[in-house]
Amino acid sequence: MNSNLPRATQLVREAISAPSSDTAAAVVQALNAAGLLADPERSYGMLLRRTPSGWTPADQPLTELEEQALAWDAACQHARQVATAVEALLKGSPEFLRVQVDGDRLIVSLHITDQAQWATWRQYFAVQHDPGRKLPHVQAGEGYRDGVRVTLLGYDMPQAQADAAARAKQPYEFDGIVYDLARPLRDADGGIWHHQGEREDGMPLLSQAGRMERCSLANTVWQAGPLTPVSDTPSTQVNPVTADSAGGEAA
Image: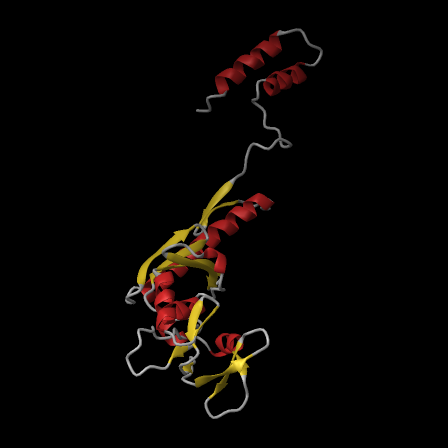
């Protein structure tokens, strides 16, 4: 039973018993004043319907705020999916610490003991060097993976840089990595590069074995990196991430 009926009945009786030139109008006015008549011009809220992606307005256009809320929910869901894929990729790596989801972005923490590790994972997460983000025991960078913003944290990275600089005969730091220009450098495709002087601004110039053309260290890193020193001893460098191993785009 509609709980409004007793109240409506009482109002109708009172309106009929009261003197009026238009009894019907008096009844309607009494019901309206009591809030018992629906007003099509008044908004009583939004009708929602349940869908696989959540609650969405039924047969009503979305407001800008609602569109932003739905976009945020979708971005957070995508971030969780990317986090799952990244964690599956990193879990077997000795440098892996954790992957955290912070809304629509990720925080990836790595234990870095060798600069080659940092260079490789920076490339994978498209991290640009930020010299202002150095902390006593961690270095941070901002990048992206599959459209999701990533904060990459390299713990013990400053110590790895200090160790590399101490071992280098001719150290040169570029983009957060210390290179020993006295040693040949191997690019991501296996090509060997040798130091061949400097530009006027001090940027080292390299040439590939068997070629005369010289290329700046910066361009060599960006186009063929990461660069790792050629050594007779096994390197702790992680294997570059490829489309086959990552299940997605190449690093």
